[in-house]
Amino acid sequence: MAERPLERQGSASRRLAPLLILLALLLGACATPQGESRRLGQAPIAGNWVTIQRGDTLGALARRADVPLARLERFNPGVDARRLAVGQRLLVPTANERAPSGGPYRYQIRPGDTYSSVARHFGTTSARIQAANPGQQPNRLRVGQVIQVPLSGGAPSRATASRPTSGGSSPRPAPAPSRPDPGDLPSSARHWPWPLDDYRVIRHYGTDSRGTLQPMLLATGNGARAKAVADGEVRFAGGMRQLGQVVIVHHDGNLQSVYAQCDQLSVEVGRRVSRGSELCRVGRHGETGRHDLLFDLRHGGKPIDPRRVLR
Image (cartoon, rainbow, N blue to C red; front, side, top):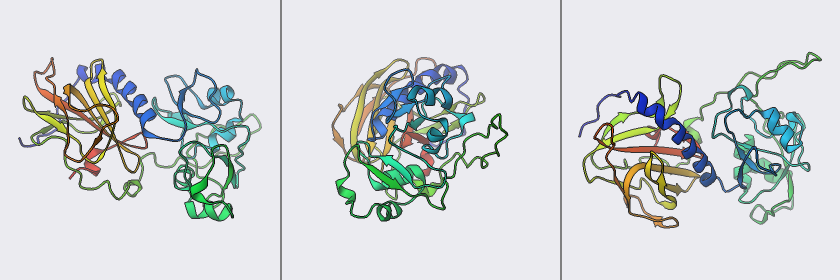
């Protein structure tokens, strides 16, 4: 089947939006090994990753964690306080952690941390962190241990909103680009096969007329089977209301692929799969009568355009 231009999904897309938010929350929990992702309304949150929900603000999150707002902002460089997104994940510091404006930071090791993962979050390099912690072996980090995290160029680059205080403080730096550079993806994320042998693109990845980010939608034929786009481990395999049967596969490099709107699963949670392994049978969409696969790719829990990775 030849690919054809984007078609509007209208009301169907709007009805799917709340379900996609739930999917994003689930992905956030699957994507990152660094600590447990918790909701704002649950305690404790200091020292954890939290997932933003509708109505959350950095100020409310800082009060909940009992940490200064400035410290919370500095522990999440690149976050724009005016544009928090539902499903976005933030790191909440502990009372033992510090973030002086010029660095280095005092950072407390969390489960799954490596120098590389910490460096990616703070926009520095693992070599700089290792140099700032002489005598510490990178492969022997202990949960709860406090390390020094020097920042490239001194102060961290932030995209946090400028909100003058009553004392008339100077505005903060201008927001940084919200989209990651293509070079941020692991080198392994190149030329992956499409999840279907026979398909046409009904909806490309991107925002709809309401500004809601929508994943890619692929139409295929009756009996088509979705296949894994890369080697990995099945982290979720089950039903989600209005999304049918869903499979989420975790890949090396903190990448995740999502296959939704299936009607029959071929895998279970914990199973290792290889590129091309059958994951599920694509279901028939009740409104359109088509057999559609909702396909999504994530890097560190953040959505990316599949066309950057698929060949």
